[in-house]
Length: 125
Image 1 (cartoon, helix red, strand yellow):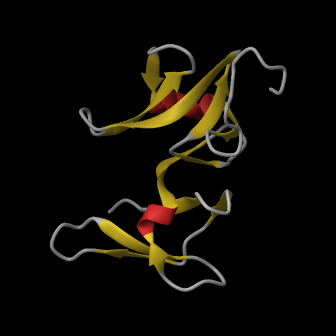
Image 2 (tube, rainbow, N blue to C red; image 1 turned 30 degrees about the vertical axis):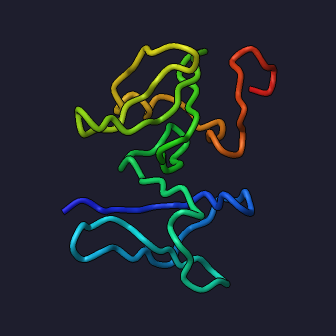
Image 3 (cartoon, rainbow, N blue to C red; image 1 turned 45 degrees about the horizontal axis):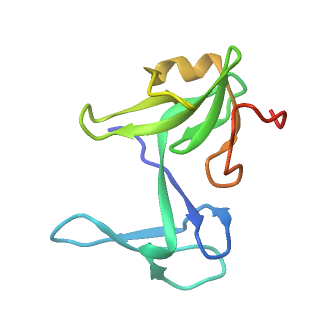
């Protein structure tokens, strides 16, 4: 069985957190509450739930949904493709996509939340 890991973006405090627990509805299997360090259970609506892709970048960092990855000189966002039921790399500013396995040759340079709005023309990266 594959390992599932999550992190959450706190929309209110604008901070990335590692959840202690996630509670799922028993009927629909949809998450409805998150427990983060130092706080009690809170509604899932306060957070953006981000799943681990199961892969690491060339530096050994775990790659999650929403991460920005630099591959060669191009920056991609890690997305979940609901139709194909897989993670993909989507080039910023275009609809061009690459296979998620290529992330192992790239480097995480941030994520869509802490580095938003991100524009490929900026000299930040």
